[in-house]
Image 1 (cartoon, rainbow, N blue to C red):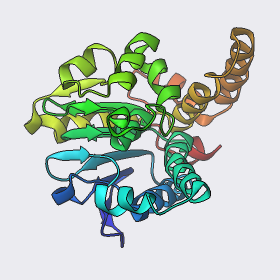
Image 2 (cartoon, one colour):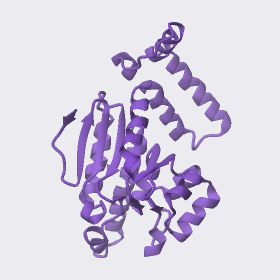
Image 3 (cartoon, one colour):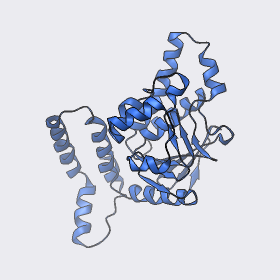
Image 4 (tube, rainbow, N blue to C red):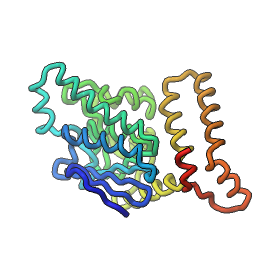
Length: 273
């Protein structure tokens, strides 16, 4: 286990091949500031170059995962800006989502409590969402006079829960319970609050032990094929699969099957080819 110097807005820790990011403003329900947006974006971009990291967990400290933009540190400041300054801010928030989706490694959001506004979109942008029973979620933007289509929510949410449910959630901006979020596919797993960390690590370790190159290719395909026709998607997947067949992980899985043993996907060649 290693630790590195980190911003005060969140903690960063490495547990073998897993990077753990913990939002660390519990007194403000881990609300976001200009600095948090920037620092998180820079971190996700940097993690793309960290070959020793195979998976990222994002969680929060205290009773909230993330309550969105800080009312005092962000909202008040925005009233002082003109259109150009506002657009600079909104584009900056979108860069965080782009960096999460663009990271070629799985990202698990471990939702330890309130998930609201921008925090809900950050969770949505993650690949897997594991929540405790108290982790209600709300895309609250319309409740403060903003479009529900913020930070990619109108793009991502219909693809996860369907257009009808996404429309309801973005139009009304109401919180939904963890149970309801799981029932519509927004949460992958809901567990009692005390079991969240253990369950998250169980999911994380399974992926971290998996074929990193194949997982990277899978995430790239999921991103890319959101925009493609069926024919284009089929050709894209044919090419991706052929590339994976040249990777050492494919041979390792075959040899492990023949030898009736667990495959070892931790070779450096399998990660980087």
